[in-house]
Image 1 (cartoon, rainbow, N blue to C red):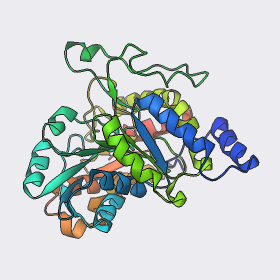
Image 2 (image 1 turned 135 degrees about the vertical axis):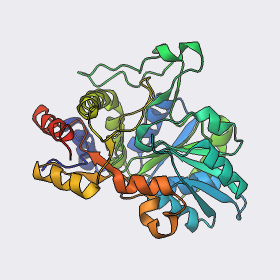
Image 3 (image 1 turned 90 degrees about the vertical axis):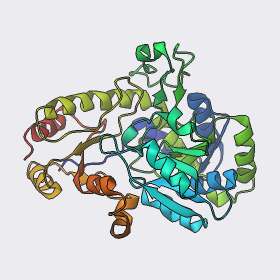
Length: 373
């Protein structure tokens, strides 16, 4: 059975983790600092902290923004369920927003409505690696935490006439180096995902684009916001900080990102062609290459159970794309308000797409995609 999810762990990743174990440096230390430095180099952020979970990262960011306790925090219905649980734990009012079907993102007009209901902070989930038109959200004038767990290392093209000509940062695939070049060094005047928000939440759980085996990085684009976050991080208990074993894995994953992303793009193009003449459609993605390929979501024109059963007979596991989302957790109370998100919960299927897939398995998936009921 070809599994829907599979972390891409190669020898380099395993050696990095084993080195920590052999050297008995498994707690927070040198590799944590090395990971943070790498994040700063790749994103050009001013400062970052690597912690044990995305929930802890979100808590740090919200505390740094220092909202009044009766404030509302705006969330996408398709965001991971731990986000609403963390917001409630912190004592804020979650305001869950519906999405648009063509890309799974929260429309600006819904954010505007949420602000009228008391929303004072937006957690912008960049679902399935698709980047929003960020300037439209910034114009609303409230703080934004970009959740880049699925859009990590994607970039926003430069605004203006040159945007259509921008190219992604290239990497020497054989050596796994070079993806750390800044956009400026590669003659790309662009910002990485996360660099427009007040803070960026970079989840590194097992199903995220970059995995640490568990954990997250929270970073600030500018010095002013970093100084506030740094004070919170400096006073944090050591049990909040990402251990070196996890940091070592994430460090190598970032270094290998460009090579893995090239493979994901090839598979995505292959899958997309196989579904063009069918009834089921994938999300609309910008024509430029900035967005990261997270996986292959397919919005079904038929029942999920039928498609799942059909794929399973062919040896392919298909899962609901948003099985761990807010709408899945609170479907009974949110379904009537978040109609599109509820529809995507029921109809959006995720097919296996990851660098470890061989040509034979990829061909099997293409065959199934082209013949879905």
